[in-house]
Amino acid sequence: MMLGLFALFLGLFGLFSGSLWFFYKRSRQESQLVRRVEALSRSMNAASKGSVPFVVLDDHLSKIPLLDRALENLDVSRSLSRLLDQAGSSTKVGHLVLQMLVMAGLGFLAGAALRANILKWILMLMCGAVPLIRVHLQRARRLKAFIRAFPDTLDMMTSAIKAGHAFNQAMQLVGDEAPYPIGIEFKRTFEQYNLGINLREALLNLTTRVDSLDLKLFVTAILLQRETGGNLAEILEKISYTIRERFKLIGQIKTYTAQGRMSAWIVGTLPAVFVLAISVLNPAYLEPLLQEKLGHLMIGFSAFLQIAGLLFIRRIVRIKYQ
Image (cartoon, rainbow, N blue to C red):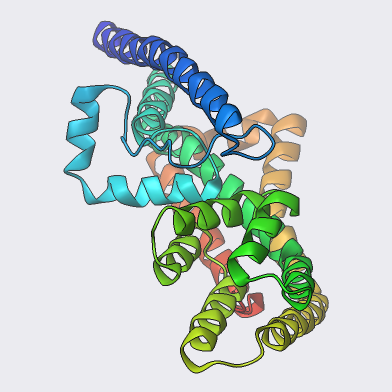
């Protein structure tokens, strides 16, 4: 049994190492291409600040051709690709899938080494989800940074429009001057529009890359203004004011729900603290729970009740505003 698990681990490790080597080899070739494009862009004055335009895009799901063809037939691959795009990650879907498989294999081997039949499957799922959780956290941080800086970006666009610039020139200004990630997203939108994509499609692509209610409000207002007319600078000022007022409301909501969120933290951490303290003071006290079948059932039922309680508290204190 252990020999088979060790062979499985070696196979997964070899596959992961081979994919990393192939990715490194391809990245060196692509870096040479990027340097050539940068030199050509500087010579033709087509790029600002020496950056490469977003026309050089790679929509492959993996650097490994066989894995790329396999992932193209799966609907979940497109969802993962959109998630990585929203997180601003340069990782390919195939690389993420390989990371999840390797981490799941390591978790399974760790559980098998502990000779716990249930624990090895739990560790496999938990370790396999670590790369995906990391991408979700990266996406949440990026979205939060975008939302916080968005009102200032609208003020910048309003000033540019009042100064006599067109809307596409205001987008270019935001792409050059706004902080990350707003600058890079608006620059990408401007370059798509500059390459011939109509403004509606370019803005809708922006809302796909950044899943923000404020951004969707902005895009809807821009598209309506282009169809019906109106003072664009005044519209952007009102949107900026609305977003800032919503920030104030969100702050009040967090203040009112602080007690409930603190209760969730206490309820979630207290059992673990008690188990740790009892294990240190009297290690033999918890042995029946870990050795007997009835103890395993009690642990599982307690964990279920614990998770259910946390979900109920979260449902009560969570106000959906995004």
